[in-house]
Image 1: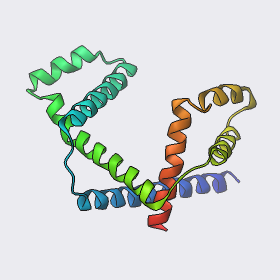
Image 2: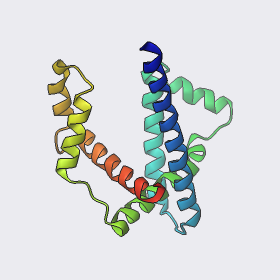
Image 3: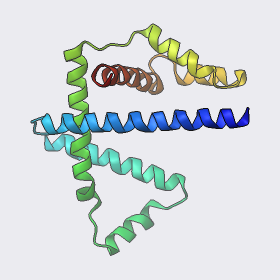
Image 4: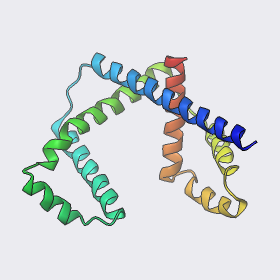
Length: 161
């Protein structure tokens, strides 16, 4: 029985990795097809966001942000310049995906989000359900992120299946 569980887990992981590869390849194809300029202000805001993400990640692992910045200066690296290309790519992907949501009429109902939240709650012990309900309450960022993920899943299903 243990071997069966491990085998199922490995298959699930492999399927997820394969789906992620297909989704990334599709997004790269969309990027190549897209012809757009991204305003510099949006790029600068996205670079700020990427650097904030990096700072939070480093500090959560106990690495002081100032020490990391000093290290990069000794390497003569410009963090903002290094993140610019990634920022442009992320902005373009968001714009493309939002356009495709509208073009393809992809929407997610409240009922679909609630159903997904219920499915997620089944994976947690009952004592954590109240916390999850608060985290995924309508209007919370986790609710919006989940709704966007469900829309993205529908978009990929439309193009990849």
